Length: 110
Image (cartoon, rainbow, N blue to C red; front, top):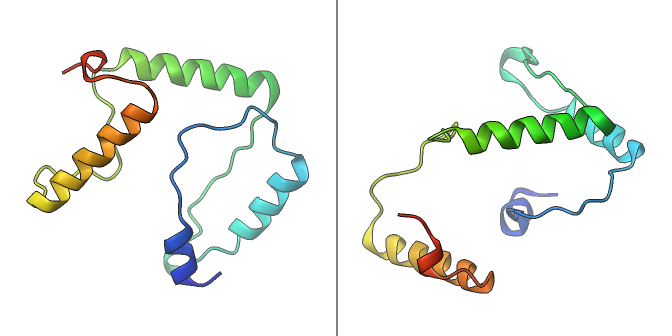
């Protein structure tokens, strides 16, 4: 895949299927990922593949931690100032997503 295709076809997914990912697919992803470049060939990554009961415990613990925390820091901070055209576009997009989910403004906490 070339860069243009990767950028144009990129999607953010917020809802996932509950189907298990076949082990051969996981192995293929790991095999491809191990060829990713790293700074000075340091290869700093660590991989953990969890399934079954361990995965369910991880999901439950992670969700609980998320719900209990006041803030949810991102690795990359969200910009605080947006140029007016981008702010309007972002607001319109957010509203359309919420409307498509039948979420009204009265349901959203301030």
